Structure formats: structure tokens, C-alpha cells
Length: 355
Image 1 (cartoon, rainbow, N blue to C red):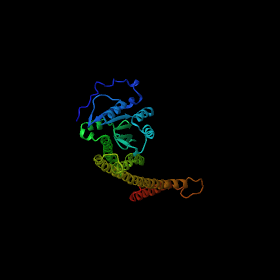
Image 2 (image 1 turned 90 degrees about the horizontal axis):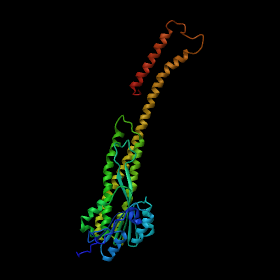
Image 3 (image 1 turned 90 degrees about the vertical axis):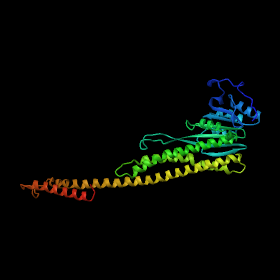
Image 4 (image 1 turned 120 degrees about the horizontal axis):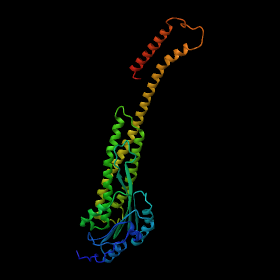
């Protein structure tokens, strides 16, 4: 490997955040890699591109976090990005997709993270989503991150410890980021599994009352997870098999492993969705059975209460001549009849499991 000129002596002075150029205010990291190793020194994105093109080898890896339109326009001017890319990068909430503009690939990844909680029955949010947008050219990769999770610093650090892989160029960084995101999908689905199991246990445990709303909330979170994860399948296949693919053949092999992991995650999410649909039907059936049981109990008590009400209503009518009104033991006979009938009804309903 030829000795590379050091840029330490030409290191750019630290720029206060308030006075930094617009694009630099949102830069997480900017580095130049040659032969798999990071050049020493600090670079702005314009200096980094100029250095790579002066050397005629290596690539730039620029990381941005939530840039605005002015900042992205500056980056786009430096790297020659299409204006439609800039619009998508600024206005987030894109579906996972892969687009090609000449020799530049634009990949959108949705990130997900699991929100810790004490109980699935008391929380409203299970997963949180964000976005990573990747612009990959022959001598650069620009990562734009929206959201406060899924930081890429560990991905960069891990790649820097493997110069042989990093020497494959921007495609290696693209693979590492995609692999990191899909691995996070696996971790999230693993964390969600106990929540689904808890709901299943509550639904099928006798004498428990579970609000159907809780199943709807968890199903909503699974739908959100599915929308973030499942559409990535097609972009991954395009990275592997698309004709005229700018991704080197040796890197495409690694993307096959990412696609396999993604398939595993998609299958898990489909299983969660199917299970929750079944649990929802079971919970609704359980609620219906419980309502029927409650109605039988209410009807039984109404029938028991109707006996004294009816007898009292008959003898409460204001007629001068009624049987047993002047009989010495009439009152006690009526009370005894009321007690006997009500007790008989109670025993009958109890034997039939109405009470």
C-alpha cells in the first residue's frame, strides 16, 4: 500500500456550531477511506470529495442526522445528487424502496426499535420507527438518518476494524448498514414475541377479563412493524439480481444473507398478525359468552324478584272484597308462599348454572 499523504497538518479548525456551514451543522461524521483505512484528519464533505478525486481512489462516507432542505441542497450539489433525492431525504415517511439515478443508488430503509414497558396490557406503544436514506455512488456513500434510534456509529466502527471488507468500497458500507437494520428487525420481533404470548395467555385463561382494545393496540403495532419491514424485500432482491447492478458481485453475495434474515423477520411478523387475528376472534367470542352468561344471571334474578312483586301487586289492589283479606293467617301464608316459590326458583336456576 503506498504511503498516503497525511492531512493532519491541513486539518480544518474546529468550527463553532452556530457559525458552521449549513450542511456541517447536521454532520454526524465525515471520513475518507482509502484501501479500507480511514485517512487521519477532519474533513468537510466538500474537502472529502475533493481529496478522494485528487487521489483517484477510495471513497467518502458522510453521515447526516435530520438535515433540512438547505443542508441537503448543499450536500446534493457536492455529490451530484438528483433533486428528487433531496426532496425524499428532507421529507421523511418514505416506504422502503430502491431507485437508481444514473450511477447513484438511492435506498430507503425503515428502522424500528422496541419500547420497553412493564405490561402489554398497560402500554399504548410497542415499537417506534425511523428512517435511514442511503445515497451510494462510485466514490461516496451518504447516510441520512431520521429518528433518535438506530445510530450508525457502531456500524462504522465495526467496518473500520475490518479493512479488508471496507476496501470493497461504498457497496460494503451499504451492505453493513442494511445488515444492521435487518438485524434490528430480528431483535425487535424477538422482543415482541413475549407480548403476543402474554396476550394469548390472558385470552385463554379462564375467569379473566381482557379488554379487546388491548389486542387491537398490539395488532396496530404489528401492522406498523409490517409496513416498515415487509416492503424492503423487493429492494433487497433488486440489489442482488437487478440487471446492470452497480453493486460488485462479491458484495451481492452478502446481500443474499441479509435477504434471508429479512425473510425470517417477515415470516415472524406474518405469524404475529395471524395469531393476533385469531386471538381477537377468540376474545370477541369470549366476551359474547360472558355477556350471555351475565344476561342469564340477570334474567334469573328478575324471575325471582318477579314473584314477590306480582303477589304484592295483586294484594295491593284497592278492592273491598278479596280472598283471605280478613283471614287471621292470610299474611303469613302469603309470605310463606313467596319464600317457597323464590327458594324453588333459586335452586332450579342454580342447578342449571344460571346463578
